[in-house]
Amino acid sequence: VQLQASGGGMVQAGGSLRLSCTASERTFATSAMAWFRQAPEKERELVAAISWTGGRTYHVDSVKARFTISRDNAKKTVYLQMNSLKPEDTAVYYCAASTIRVFTTTQLEYGYWGQGTQVTVSS
Image 1 (tube, rainbow, N blue to C red):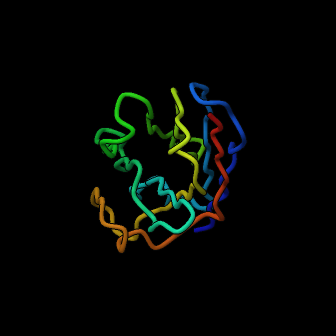
Image 2: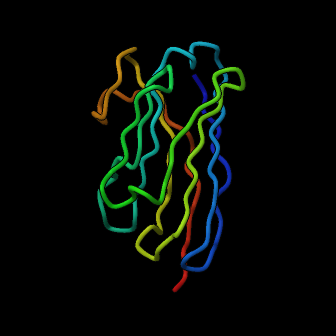
């Protein structure tokens, strides 16, 4: 599975961005999907995850009520709507597809990764 992420950029604090990640395979439709991020000198962290049906989602506490993950299986695309962005959201954002069919928030169970897209939030 190849994943192509897009939608990053530079925005002022309080602004919004929407990240998109499109998969190359139809098997995307049976994979849990997630967005991770990695800031300079920090470990990569899970930001949000969504089950293959879209019926179950997870958002890390620091982004709850600001970010929303969603997916469109017909388009083989997962989205991350990011509102009320803060400087601490600055990071490279990666989309990932799980290698197992069940919903998971375990990074090791995400075996397919996109190339990353930079999000920079200025104060």
